[in-house]
Image (cartoon, rainbow, N blue to C red):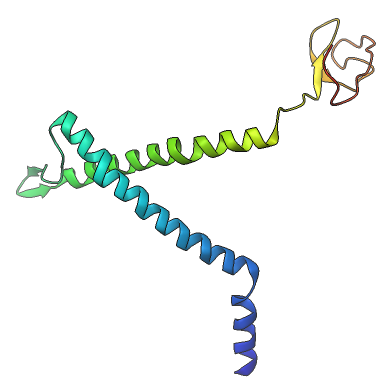
Length: 143
């Protein structure tokens, strides 16, 4: 029994378990913030433009069976709006920030002087037309 508790303690105190737990907690908190943004700001804005703030009451009946498709429409719209908010307010700015931190990408290929195929900068001969090439060092500006 003592060995089992020691193994459990080692498992819980591993770095990746703690990182995962923190990530889940932060993810849930961020999801709540995004959901509140959609529910309290974006959905009322759409409702003001479209005059239909809630689709939950939409339904149709077939042989006395009632199909409440409005809840599905609400959930689908909620998902699309949340996905758009996350993309435009989180993913796009973070991608831009990452690319700015990384700096400009240095090309590792160039065009063959004879056939204009893409070849490595260090190539001494084109692999497509076999014409001799003057090699360039990777990282040097293209001619």
